[in-house]
Image (cartoon, rainbow, N blue to C red; front, side, top):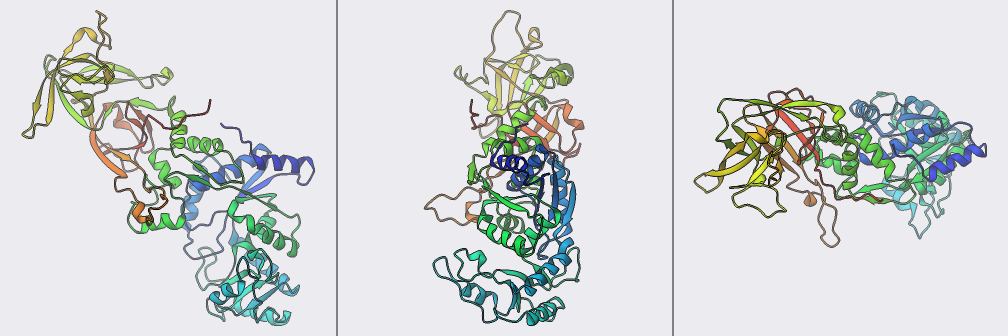
Length: 549
């Protein structure tokens, strides 16, 4: 496990040394309106890992203050994702648990003269707010009396007004250089049933008001969020102070994680699903945690990837191949290695007895003998990958079977190609070969060297299988191209191959991990059955990532 060591850890150590806090409490506050993606993993892993370093606690708190698109489906999926990553929240809370207490804090602000009910429309509110270079304009209703504001806010709560007809705004400073402080809306009207509260409420607190209060209610010491909330911290502190929250939580921002050719916008991900461009949120091409899990990425590989990329206040872009690197590092000593032929070419061994099926033995993992071994088979008909045969003997750098050339079959025999059968289009459909029985196990008694070693699957015992091969789903924007998001989709992001895998795979279960010899790391798909084996390629064996030595 990568050791967590970043600027927030340094801050926490200092806070503990100076006695600012006595125990560390963090929280992960997702909005339950979408599935988590790899970008969320940075927040999850750092929230939990930092707390664990200091024997602290971490809450999972669902930010369900906006009932539009929120639902139990996402709540369940988020809990499952966090557990899969290897973490168990000390508590699970919902922002809606605090609606009554949050409402009371809004009343407190009104009574202090620090909040007012406003009648401006959303468009007028935006217009009155001003710009980065021009101050805002006070609302005509900014100076309503405390009594009137209390009455109107109660009427908002009772449902007497339509959506957008009134809001509750904090009274701060319409000339503030920080636009977030220009009388921000802290409550709005939404006549939408809540997934937990039903129709009890028709007014809902805004994130910038509810979030600091929820942190304070839970005793959170270090509220970690991404860097886009940096300009909101002044409002976070204002809410904590004016609502008299003690002890006061503090917000700390870290840079966003961007990955090449990977879209991490909930809006775009929803567009892909609802537009039918993918099969769902768990499509293996999606950067969602359910998609990555189905594709075969392990929790360990994702944790190591996140911790290995570090944490700073600067947004960073990481090459996607780094995630492949961590998957290979995690699985190279764990995954069973099987032979699978995804683009098969039939080879008939003319001098091997017809009807005979021979049992041989192969290690489950050549680099880790402790994983044991399994039976493989050999008969007079086998399958090899098409790319492993050429009619004319290749140069020494290309180790393949060719006419009048020998290769070693892994854990079996030397074979020599002697002729080919072709179809009416001149395509090779079958190779005829001979085998040397003295080379059983892979070496020749006379010391001769074959033209390489190739894998194979025995035709008598091999199993039919489908292999899903994935490529980039969405290409990054290229300066000057001016393409829309949909225009940047890769039309060749999913290729389905039909081939064969050795008999050992018959008892595989969804989620099992393998390394298919020379082909890559694969995972058994959730739809796979004994009658219809399906494997998803997680990554190929060659990564473009070069670790720093």
